[in-house]
Length: 243
Ligand code: GLP
Image (cartoon, rainbow, N blue to C red):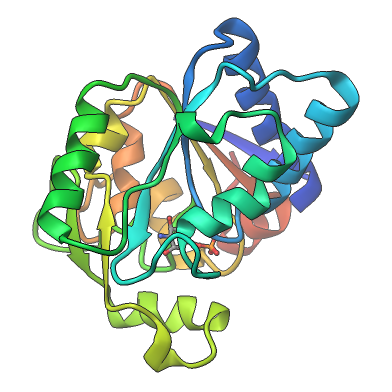
């Protein structure tokens, strides 16, 4: 696992964008695995700038997203489909027909069947990840075991608490989500985790310990052959990570 220490959030965004750019330039028809949450937002802005000013071409790129809330339609402003459109897809020349975010409404079993079929036929070149305060990846919540394929999860109280800032009230935060499984994530050729916000406990477990712990799913990054974690110097200092 490679750890990059960034000067600040903008530097972290640029370092992350460099890895995505490299993947797209090496294979202009690659599939990107994308993530939501506040952590990758600046990186998406940087990619949009590189598209506008430097001609980074997404016209043949495909994408698949990590997860979606159950109960939110893609037009809902807190759905992850809406997030991806407004934070990235509307600002680059990707063909939205080539982007996949699992459906949040309708029959959950049918949506998961479709999600798993998409994942089974897709080779993800690089998977972007944020991390939850409890160490979750996508919506793979801590537990006694982790799940291989796409599945439905019941959100932890701490996840609902962390994500309520995006909703009018806590009661509006969906209680369930569909998510790529840990196997889907681990099968991506490269992983890129951008760590923003208050992730001290999860980062201590990932960076200062060598346990692979399903109660802190991000620790599985240690098992991947080509994973990069980007965190700010401020956070590294705060947890006492020396590199
Ligand atoms: C949500 C998403 C995760 C994301 C996490 C952290 O729970 N399902 O994929 O990593 O939020 O979000 P943030 O980057 O806003 O801290």
